[in-house]
Image (cartoon, rainbow, N blue to C red; front, side, top):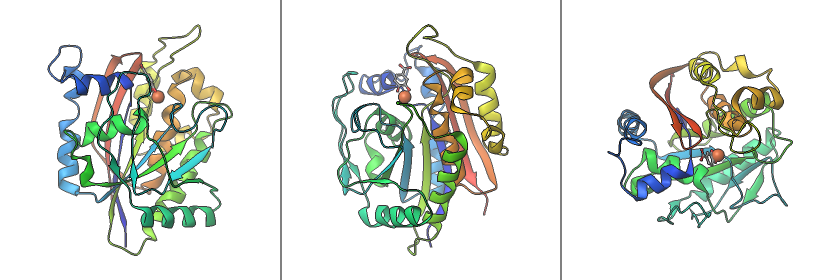
Length: 280
Ligand code: DHB
Ligand code: FE
């Protein structure tokens, strides 16, 4: 049967994609950020996942404001990025696994999560930047991918509790797949940031620390928060933290934190990274 080996969360700021393309790993601005990632890659080399389910939000590449599904899953053989206007170059395609995607979709819809299904799907920086951080130099084709998109851009957004429960349904769907696949779950975005309005540039280190301290052993701490609560604490775009909660829901009751890194700011965002290993 398929198993969930663990989860990774990371911010997905577009400027990171630009810095990777320009090889800025040793640049003083970027070094403390990029230096956070080798321990997560070492962990991936140890647990050797076959598939990455990437829980992220699309920022207007695949879905625009005219059509904004709350939850959508890819079921394509490959996923490409496109020019989003941030100056991130297009990169080689990501590998899909349609058979596994359809199993997840069938299982989650039967489990009352009515996903939009996408047999073609362009993936934006919310997906491509984390995949490049964890599998550098285009080695991401080592793993098959399943994009799982959650609306964090146009209100109403799904609540923290709804996202956590969606993650739990994803975990059940993965564990009911008959093949021996090892699956890692990525939850991208966050931590605190706000890109527009009067609070543009807002960062809340105290709340970010709480998120990082509680995501492993007490994720339910956040489940009574509303989206306005989350926007107040984390900023309008910091509401992307619901993607971390969805990831955590898929991992099951017990996890061990293997690694973390926190660095402020990268662009306008508090960059947070956590690596959680599932405890069987
Ligand atoms: C930034 C952060 C994001 O999460 C995003 O989607 C776009 C931009 C930023 O800090 O620049
Ligand atoms: Fe974002």
